[in-house]
Figure (cartoon, rainbow, N blue to C red):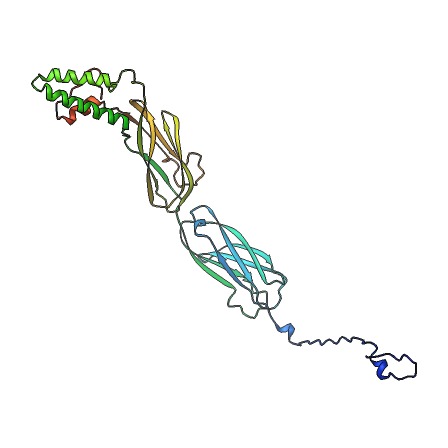
Length: 321
């Protein structure tokens, strides 16, 4: 309505009509008699992560129930089957949102399987489409990881200073040999030993010194499933030397590494343990440790020099192999 009868004459004049405006709201409401005929349409979806499918280990099965049809706010039954046999049934509550998400656990068994998830198997709810009430998924369940470990022979790491010293001795010996090559072999050998003594090559006070070695370590996963985030511990004479962390080792695969250790000459016990704290679930836990006695040796520069000269090697008291 427009205007206001300001002078009370019963009529709204032009001036009175421009005085102010009364807003008016109009609304249109539409209804449909066919609303009650829109039926729900329930259909499920199922997913599972590949790494979850390991023999005898519960796998998490994720699922979604969708309803793009009419509102369904009631309890419905869900059935889970493996290779045609029903394993699990449980109720879920559908809401007006039309989407329900959840997960359940399945104790996986090694082999190829057909998983099936169906909603409302007893056909209690009226739907617009009953043909999409089930979904299937083919899966392959692998055997558990099976870690084993072994050790190779130690390899001595050449010391640079020792190599340089040996070279100096070798050159000195050649010079002596050229000057006195007419002398007898025993005198020449005596000269070599004297040079070695003065150069510090022969083991005397250094008998207790340690040398560095590389120990080959081989880790194998004989199972089908991957082994993830496990440790490899190396021990020398029951004392821990180092710990290797392996992020992942695929099934039916091996890796090799060289671990550096320092040890005195002589016999030592080396042992290596994989997944020592049993953080990885395996099919066989009895092959996770390997132990052997190894002979660590130091080659003296005396023998090295004699081999370079292609001369007969001797073993004097101060030149041990």
